[in-house]
Amino acid sequence: MELGDVEITRVIEFSDISPMTTDVFFPGSKPEEWQRHAALLDPDHWDARTDLTRVATQSWALRSEGRVILIDTGAGNGKYRPLQPIWSYLNTDYLENLAAAGIEPEDVDLVVNTHLHDDHVGWNTRLDGRDWVPTFPNATYLMPQSDVTYWHPDNLHRTKFGRGNQNVYEDSIQPVIDAGLVKTWDDSYVIDAGLRLEPAPGHTPGSSVIHLDSKGDRAVFAGDLMHGAIQVHEPHLNSCFEEDEDAARASRARMYAYAADHNALVLPAHLPGHGAFEIRREGAGFEISGWAPFSRT
Image (cartoon, rainbow, N blue to C red; front, side):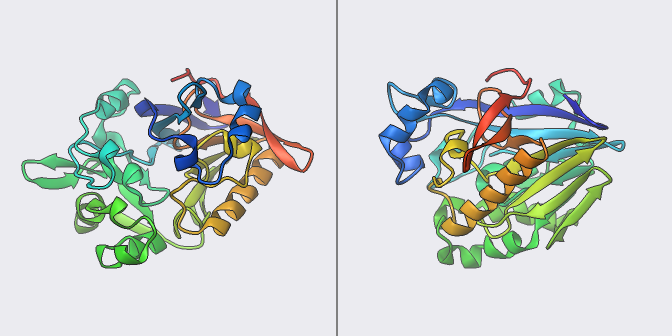
């Protein structure tokens, strides 16, 4: 699809994973909250029969001002994740799916990692013999400085996610730093006339969103500010992966308010089905008012 002068392509790594039951993925959520929104959630986002949540892993590929920009890079192939078996030693068709969108690794000019969890940086690198090398050798990799510091292996014991992110720095972050391809940022970062990065801390200290504003069209690439459609209608719910629960809720609320008030499309990293949505205010809260025209996954 096109918004203003920016072309957006959805690139799938995984399209329909059922990783956890609702009470595990969204601690504190109640069965009645899921049942209340069953018509919205079942079957694309939740299987009411098994109580399993459903998620996708995807990148958003943008063409803007003559550049190819890749937002988040999934979990990657062949990587060992001791406490995250769902992402361990994968063998997916991600690069083939990227090629189907007309993008070869050498074509990518900019990689934006919204944060540095394992399933957002995995295709930063690929295995060449015994070495992890940058997958996108001509790209600049934008990373939030606070996450570069926070997820350094020396600091994992201080994080909530801890060993869930084990090996990630070594195989998906340090190699691109060593290659001189990483540019870190704080506060905000202007990508081009229609795209800018803004902090949205909580899920991780450096979690960020990308705002698109071009010719009156607007969008928010939301990263992991939300993991499921239920969080639009039940915004108090956090996933089990938040480093700072209160900050995550606050960042999500700001994003919802902006999207509702500016008619901005919301494009998260893990939403299955149509993958993105429009939002409007409903009483004191929000509701999904429409889905993006991407094919259901």
